[in-house]
Image 1 (cartoon, rainbow, N blue to C red):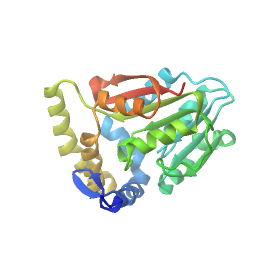
Image 2: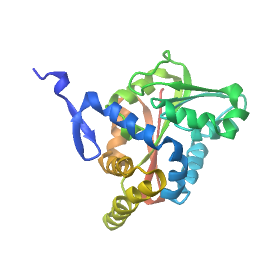
Image 3: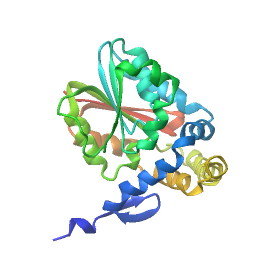
Image 4: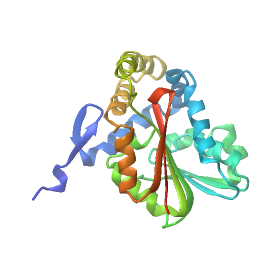
Length: 250
């Protein structure tokens, strides 16, 4: 019988014990928290903002809905949701407290304080009761989870019947030549940019490597279905640089 403690997973291109990955990811985001939003703008040329707006367009928040945004970091998704869901509420959950601290500093956080909570928590073991939320979102975070299937199961658990899962994540370009060009940019430019802006090359090297380790669009859609979600579909953004996945708890 295999000892569960012997299980390994990837941390970028490294193979590490499962028990160590969460701590390593926590170290990455604690290191980059102060410049995280700036680096997102620089790395994507601001396109991540359009992707997040596209996420809200497809989600179409309704009045009084309750959102759980996991790996929500500095609040980008929660802020967008609350601006559209009249009378709604949101919880930003992230395992890295330094990211939540940065989010609370933003002007939107003060304006939306009455309908917004910030909670330190693990995507694989959420600190919320069953059937607590109408919407579950996770953006550029699920690829960092040690066991993705566990996170999807937790998403299913905390959603109410009729609730919706939506995942925004970097993905795979369907055209090999375009993927090659994107990889050259990612591996050669982004870590160097991270070093200049944050003083931390290694964290951005990991983030680039983690993108390549994440399942392609169809494989990830199959994982969502396996967690119990129905009507699963996805949309490519910027030719597949990122993808939006949607599923419903029926």
